[in-house]
Image 1 (cartoon, rainbow, N blue to C red):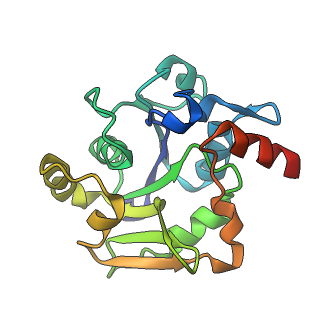
Image 2: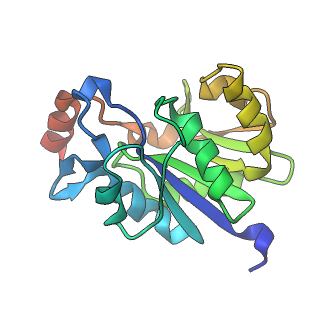
Length: 195
C-alpha cells in the first residue's frame, strides 16, 4: 500500500464532560468495557496508526496500547484542538476521527467515511439526513496550518471550519441511530437498558 493510501486515526477523548459531572466519558463502563474501547475496536482495523486524544487520565488511556496525545494546553478547546494535535502527530495524509462516547459505531460505518474522501474532497463528515455529525470525519492532514489559524483566531466550531473546505456530507440516514452518544448518566443508563 502506498503512503498516500495510509490512514491515521484519532479517538477524541479530550473533553471535560461537564454534563457527565466531569467524569471522563471514555472511561465509563458499558457492558464491562470502557466506552473508548468501542471506538478503538471500530477504528483499529481501518488505520495504520491509531492515536487517542486525551487531556486527563492519560495513564488509563495508555492501557489501550496506543499513543495518547494531548491538546498541548490546559484550555480544553474542544474537538478541533484534539484534531489539530492528531494532525501534528499523524504520519499519514488522511486522519480518521471518531469520538470516545458513541459506542454504536462500527468499522463499516467508519469505512463509509474513508470511501467518501475522494481526491476532490478535503473532508468527509457524517450526515444523518437532518444534521451533520462533525466528530465523525475523514480529514486531509494538510489542512493543519489552516486549522491552527482558525483556532488561533478564537474560533472553535467544527462545522464552521469544515465549511471553509471542500466538504462531502456522507449519508448515514439509513443508520442514524449509530450516532447515539453518551453525555449524561441518564444517557448511559438508557443505552444499557436497550442492549
